[in-house]
Structure formats: structure tokens, C-alpha cells
Length: 488
Image (cartoon, rainbow, N blue to C red):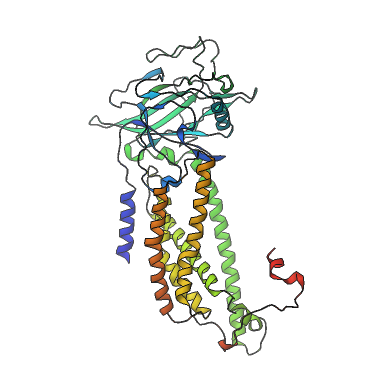
């Protein structure tokens, strides 16, 4: 058992290793806490002429809505070329769609719901920091203040709102600040990626944008108002690039993302949840110990009082023991999946670059815990005096997973038809989940049920189990005590 556990940890650690890639920019998605993740090109951004989606590494990544695509930007870490301002123009490799009337409404909605642009460089998320010196859409003034933590570790705002005039501005100028570490032998590694989003109206005669000259504008920076976008013309996007030497080594480059402000807020919420869980556990243990002491004392007594007077009703077999056993087994399966996944997350550190790993592991462990589902559901079914264990096992293997899979397919279809969310799963991903259910979970349920039915029946505290009876309601019971009234 110890070797098996070590093997699982080893495989988990191997699958979470990341390799350095090139320094080409990859798009990820548009994400917000107020809406579903959207495709990156849901907004009218310039895009490569030949789009090629990088194969998704795992089902968990697909469930997160990640769709990695190569972008047309590529930063050379060997040259360390600084770019003051460069306009993205159409070419043989790049196309910029013309702005339609619906695009203005899209952009306003994205800014209103505070959507973030998520892109990757060398598998690092391009984050953003909150500088108090900069207002909505301002261009950064070098040198930048030294801030260690990302405000948004996974992206930067697509736009901003002016609190005074309620105007919405599009961040069409991206100021890249890339940090690199140089080793003693001269090799350089990218260890940080940041974007300071800015808004810049390139149609203004005051703006002068060139890769070799500093960005120049008049007395006031002209911002790109979304309402002022010209129809049937592409939006002008531009970017700047600044390189920053860092003492952070390659192995520690994720520390700034892990210790970001968002992560600290999540840790605070997690601490509150843990405190509540411990409080519930202590109170539950106290009540359980009191019940155990009280019931044990009454069982030793010869008088029929309290527990002895209702024990036959408590352990009376229900009208549908197979359904109760199936729900009990499904609960054990879900609980086992959560415990193993959280346990591995505590024991083994996984790189944040391996997105969706925990989602994939949860699906895998749910299938593997099918053996415990079949085992405990059959123990419960046998406790209630059931004899049709094959029918109960089939119900256990099919009922709960089939209902959940069917409902998810319906929701997935609705998401596909009604929104442009990137969380939509294609037929191949759905087929993978279906195969995990049929070829992993289902056989293990039957194996667990077989061993569970072979076990001896669980003993219950009765002098004579033959007095167990089915609790049925009288036909003359008052209307307010009927089952559907009580359920309401």
C-alpha cells in the first residue's frame, strides 16, 4: 500500500513538470468574476491570419475555458530589444477585423463586467499591478514604482471607466515589462511578465508612435473612447516593450504569482472556511459522544424508554432500499474523491503552469473511487435486508453519473448555442469523460459491490431484528402531516 501511494505521488509530480518554451505570446481567454470565460477573439482584436489552436493538455484545462492559441507577437530574449511604441498593422501574417456596430456593444459589456485579457509568454501568465500614480488609461512613466505583488496575476483589464463622466475607454496600448534572470554562464530565462494597460487614440494628430522614439503626445493624453470608434475600420492596437533584469531565479519565478493580492484574499477566505469546518467538527464530535454515552446507557437498561421506544422506527427499511443505497454509495464516492485530491494537493506541490490538473485528477479519482461506491452501497443495501443486489449495483453504476452527465450535456449545448463562452466542451472531450465513466468507474462499481455483498451483514443494536417493520402512514392521517406538505 505504501509503494502504491508513493507511485501515485511520483506520477503526480511527473505530470506537473513544465518545460521552458519559446517566448512567443499565446492567447488564453477573456475572464471575469461577473460572467463566463469567453474566447479571446470574441473582442475585435488583431489576430493571425492562420489560427492554430494548441491541443488542450487535459480535460480540466478545457473545463476552465482555456483555449491556447499562438499570437503574432514574439519577444527575443537574446537581443533584449526595447520598443517604445509599435503599431500593429495588417500584413501577410496579421489581420485586423473592421469594427461593426455589435462590436461596440460587446466592448462596452466587457468593460462593464470588468473582463481581463489573459495571455501567456513562455507559459507565464501576463499579470498586472495596481499603481496608484496612474489613472484610467494612463501611459506609464518610467521608472516604475517597485511593487512585488501582482494585483491581477492572470491578466489585465480590457478597459476602464471614467468615474466622473461615465466614459468607457479601451486599453488598446499594452506596455509589456518583462523580467529576466541571467545566469553566470550567460543564459537568460524569463522570470516575470507584466502589462500596464493604457488607452491611446492613435487617430489624434497629437500622438506620435514609433519603435525608436519615445511616445509623444500633446498636453493631455488622448484616450480611446469606445463610443467614438469608427465603424467599418479596424481598431488600432499598439504595444511597447521594456526589459528588466531580475535576481529571481527560474525555480522561483512563480512566487510572485502565488503571493499575489488575489491569492492572499483567497487564503483569507480559506482560513475562514477551515475555522468553520473545525468548529462544526468539534460540535459534531461533542454531540456524537453524548449520544453514544446516552444510547449505550439505555441499551444496558431493562426499561423500554427513549431510544428503545423509537429504535425500530429509526432502522426500519425504507420503501426503496435500492435508491437509498445508491445515494449512499454516490456520497461515499464523492467524499473519497475530495479527500484524495485535497490530500495530494497538500503533499505534492504542483506548478501553477499546469492548468487544469486538479480538475483532471478529480475526474480520474471519481472514477477510481467507484470501487468504494459499490462496496459501501452494497453494505447499506444488505443492512436493509435487500436481496436484489445485481439490480441495485446497476442502479448505483448508472443512476447518479448518467443524470449528471446528461444534465451537463444539456448545459454544455445551451452554452454553445447562446453564448461565446470558451467553457464549451467539444464532442471529443465529452467522449473522454464518457469513456472514464464506462471503462473505469462502472467496472469498479461492480467489483466493489461483489465484495461488499460477500461481507457479513452489519449488526444493529436490537434484541430481536424480526420486529423491524416498514413504517407506513395511515390513510386517516391529517392533511398537514402528509409527506408532500412536510417536504414543502
